[in-house]
Image (cartoon, rainbow, N blue to C red; front, side, top):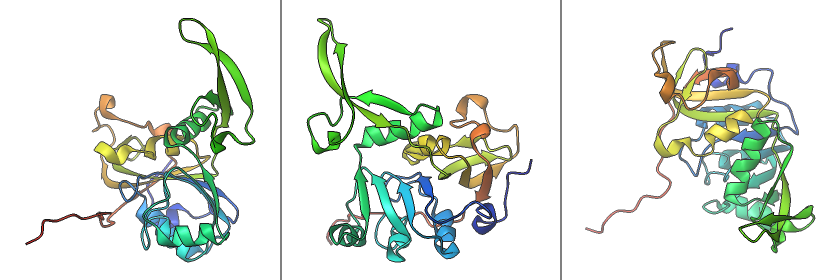
Length: 237
């Protein structure tokens, strides 16, 4: 099975449709699958739901899909740094399912593990708990009953991620903080497409250094996307 494709458009061929749920890796502009996002934009699909830590910034990341009004809903934990996101949400054009950061990562991981729901204390007593099933569990040494809310696993139609290295079988290695949401996002998609900086010979990766086994990855492209800096701070002259 050949997993290596020539470009993002070919790698996404036959996978895109309107109204689909896409899990996207990245944190701000760190570790985002930029070429794949560009190809999604060029495809013209619309009414998309993205499960992603955030929506990039204006003009980069998922932000380019907000500008073209191709995103209907965001499942996110951080919504700063993006003026168009703010404008669309406050005007009612964009739906937002606000999810605590750790909960979002666990929802993706749960989906990848086939777990439809789990209980967490995060969000109890806040608007995050509104409309969610609550249950008490005994915790601690005294077995006191405490409140928990149920969160649902994310089962995405497609996962798009960015990695540092891959071999032809799809084994992935992420680099430092660029691992972020990429690993759990990759596991929760019915199909996973990975954008990688380097494709190496099969068998050359140390098995103990592989972060995501190739069983989760269906298609791979080599990336030459620019590495952007989200916020640059310099000293005054």
